[in-house]
Amino acid sequence: MPREQSKIRKFLRLDREAMAILLMAAGSIISSAAYIYVNEKKYHPFTTVTMRGFFSLLTIYYISVRQNQDLTFASRGNFRILITNSVAVALTSLVYAGSQFYLSQPIAIAINSSSPIFCVIFDKLMFGVSLNKTQMYWLVVTFLGVLMVANGHQIYELFHTS
Image 1 (cartoon, one colour):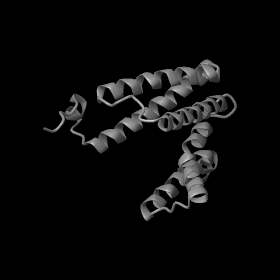
Image 2: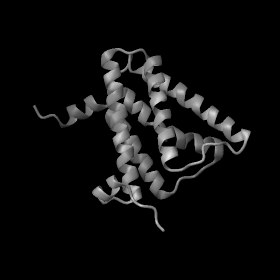
Image 3: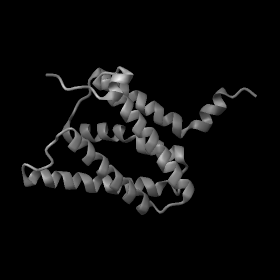
Image 4: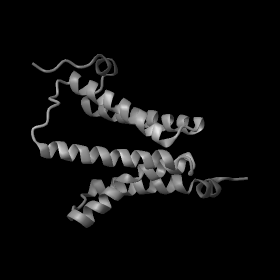
């Protein structure tokens, strides 16, 4: 028997992939808006990261329990990988939150959003992973998007007609 769709998915008439894209887009918008709010209120970066981590943990726990996922670890290796990943994410979040006190919001978001570019470069250098045509296309689109945000003033001057 297929699992019953959520009320939101039924209302919006979306399949799983479209719903995932919608949720990721909403998460990105909310995350950026939260950082803008924090920047305006001049909260300390450590406070920002701690609160973000706390609410992320609660959200992930809620989703895991709701989806009936097993929260136990099969081995110590899995736990070690999770802890290493969590520390890396915490450090990255701390640097990102701190950067907003020194950089403008669009520049900080552009740098943070450029992480897929660095993942591809590191994958190629460290593991020899190659990209297919579609992945290469989206990498170019991502790179152009970062360039547009980083050089927004020059692009504005290029098209400004006064």
